[in-house]
Amino acid sequence: QLVESGGGLVQAGGSLTLSCAASAGTFSAYAVGWFRQAPGKERVFVGMIPYGGEPYYADSVKGRFTISRDYAKYTVYLQMNTLKPEDTALYYCARKRTASFLRRSSETEYDYWGQGTQVTVSS
Image (cartoon, rainbow, N blue to C red; front, side, top):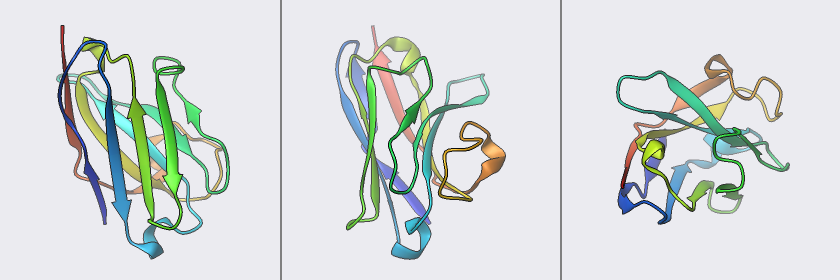
């Protein structure tokens, strides 16, 4: 089970940090990804962090978002800076079937999903 938290309402230019917590067995040796779904749109890849590796990002968030993980707490974070109204979405974390970065943007590569946390950016 994955549990996201940290969503909320923020003004454009502001920051939020999302958390994705899981049990030890869920996260150990797996990559973890973040996706988002804006109203009326498909869910899209935001970024992911391999197990023991460096994170990868979608071009739309590169330079503004940072993914990190605390291995001891089995928690992955999505720090979002310089938020824009177009970042408004329901944000999901998901466990990737493998530890690697390959096929990182494909939803089919992820087997466990959180319930999502809403991020709303006002202009």
